Image (cartoon, rainbow, N blue to C red; front, side):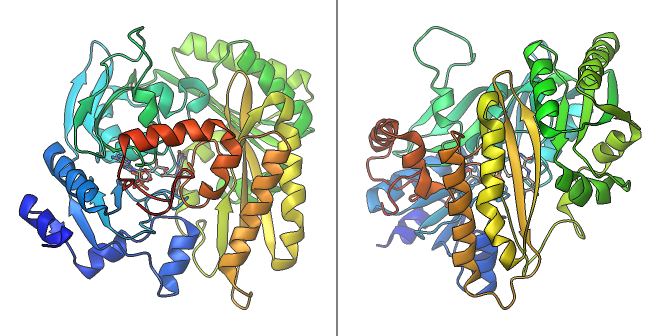
Length: 468
Ligand SMILES: Cc1cc2nc3c(=O)[nH]c(=O)nc-3n(C[C@H](O)[C@H](O)[C@H](O)COP(=O)(O)OP(=O)(O)OC[C@H]3O[C@@H](n4cnc5c(N)ncnc54)[C@H](O)[C@@H]3O)c2cc1C
């Protein structure tokens, strides 16, 4: 009996439908879209539409027994090819596991099944005067389990943290089919925090089926500000000091001159020609206003001049427009974001290194737009987005795409940065993970082998072997 026959006997919802397999051969990564257009998609052999922990457990047990690759899939909105089944096998689509299990209004936590859609979650919480302050630009498509598995970040991260700061506990089906719950609190001293092992594991260590996250009340007040700043150096220094003084703007987006004029300006409908900071403060009115005033004083001392706050409000209202036509690119364009993170002492080196590394690709029409938008006490993230408007007529666009990434990633590593802040590793960065981690990657590999002895979970991701 084949693996698919066994699977069908165990679970009713196994699909080998061509359209279903084609849907699961791509995410939002450029190479997967290009492969589809070229007629070379990385098709899985089957798709399991999981409806329960037991469906997932039975699939993983059988896949381990047969040595068949398994790729978990939430909303398929990843941009790094993490959900693409390059080794074939079976995709476990958890989007049907989408119940809200519990909202605990006293503890301000919610438990949802992993396939629950980000936008639907937000709507349900808002009806109760609550929100989940993880707002990635992809909330419309992404799942809560995918937020966790890709170790993502939302637009309010400078105040509320990344997903790893917002997750309380998880239910996970391990590669050998055990269903486990991590401890129900994220702060304890009963051994290491197992929840965090699965955050960012990109489906290589098991399938997350349930997630408990922190909530906050809907903010009483929001204040928007925009400031023109004479140089990147002065802006980064002033914003660093703001974060280190314990002030927590909900939004800090600091665009370099090209991004201000090339990406921000068309969306807000105003001319902008130098570095521009967009700021949003929220929560209790008196506290938010005090935080805003203090931040504006710091930026003024750095030579900043206040712009019309409506500029930031317009960006907030239109922030999803960037990801819809006519702003979001489509083939035959080529695009990607080489987001990196570094301590403040190195962030400008990383910024300049990426620019220098990508400059030669100007010959192929590459444009770069960069901003800094997830701020921590110790450092920040640089978000260089590259774009080639039309690849028609270029020799081997996929090879060019790989060369662009290789140049960017090597520049980041040489400048002392870390090669990703929030989009994850996927297939794009997998070849560089071992170099990034150094000898510690061998420890991660031993953990992987212990949990997934058959090596079936999402092979070829996180720098792990490509075959089971
Ligand atoms: C327009 C656009 C804007 C974006 N903006 C942001 C942003 O602002 N911030 C941000 O962080 N990301 C952003 N992303 C990237 C992407 O949306 C996130 O990585 C998101 O968290 C992926 O969730 P998903 O459910 O779509 O996961 P998928 O794409 O389905 O999967 C991503 C990875 O997680 C694994 N996975 C998914 N579900 C599970 C599960 N239940 N158990 C175990 N593994 C699982 C998959 O195997 C894969 O490795 C953006 C993407 C797009 C297309």
